[in-house]
Image 1: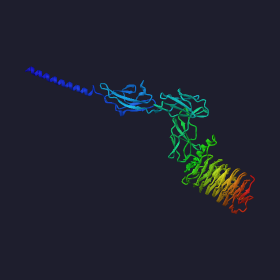
Image 2: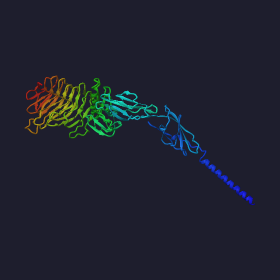
Image 3: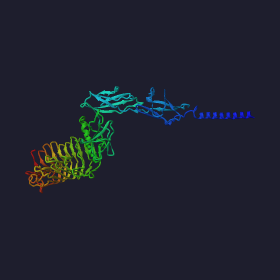
Image 4: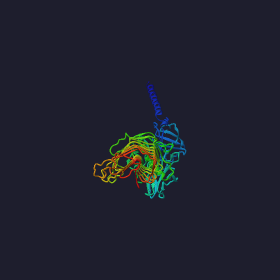
Length: 602
């Protein structure tokens, strides 16, 4: 009995031990040896290319402690799965074609390798960084080398002077003047592409490097915007009158009607000076400036931009005498009434750059022009119309212009002339209605102050007043309906003055010599100089009041004619200080003539 029980016990223990062994073996087979790792998720593979790296990443695989990377003939084992830079792996090369297969296999101690995850890849390539200037001494420019660069190209004024400056230096010392210098890094055009140019100016006179001015300017939502210049710490914005303001942004608000000449970077580097001011190509106006497609003027700011385009023309015509002139057209009426006017303010700007082109008003109107107490010298829309220029067919409706004395030493510098101070070109078809002009210490002309060109087919009506300056030595000043002074070569033809009044001012101090300050009035021309022509003009009604009591010269067509040619002119009704003109040509101290005030020797 005892033996049977013992043997049965042993059998039970053996069965238990066998079951435990089997359970352990099954557990091991589930958790360790003999199992294959999961494959890398193909969708998780990310590649980032730069000049210096080829970085590859993917999601980790559970229980993997390393990965085998294969790329067309290259193999490496890595322990990480984040941003692995294969360019830094010694001996790892890439196919020159940029097309290959990437294979990644997960590996882990005690686990079977995963099935390889394979994806095709074609490099997109990266753009090389622009070369960085590192030194400049004795005219030799140097820049930082890069292993990713196949060659460096140096250009001077857009001409290649070195196709492969492999030593990363170039000698500029033999250059003269101001030269544009560009350094471009070229790649293999598969893995790396050419950089943007590092563009600078070499100033031979100062033997210095300078930033180039900004050239990619454009206008968006009343702002002038431009591209950033590497290395610039700020920018100078220069207006057409050479006033400047410094900004750190790459935009500038021009809604306040500032007309910009150019933008240039201020240097933030010791090796490079700030740029020299140059005109920036800004597209202010629609059109091309040709007779077939004129520049189109629609707004107050548009009219001002004539100065910008004529500045460009003046710079270019100096080296190209056959350069076609700009053509501008008004597209609509322009109303200045919404622009506020207060003391010493104006709602219209003079165009100070000599005008070479053609401005065709197409019969459109400039309404409600206001210039209040202007003290900047003479006022006119154009400072100078050069030979060959034309301004035509514009209506000025109800303009009001007043000037004031600058100082006692300059009592005759406040002339008013609606269109131009100096005219060597052609002014025609200008109509001025209901003008109200007042000058202190100066003269007033309806169209042009000093004419060497042609003024024709213009019409004027309004009131011109000479204000008292309270200066004891104030001269007796002049007024003319069309042209103040018609000089040698000047032609004033077929113009009309309708209802026109010239008014002097009685001085507050009757003891002063300038008790009355209006001395000369010409319905069409005040002075007709030798060699001038005044023909075919007419007036309807001219009234002169408060002219200088002791002496004045008033002529319905010409006040003072000094051997100028005049014929074919038609008189209307003329009175001066309540005296009606009856003689064709006047004489004496109070000369009054329906056509000529008096004949002068000069």
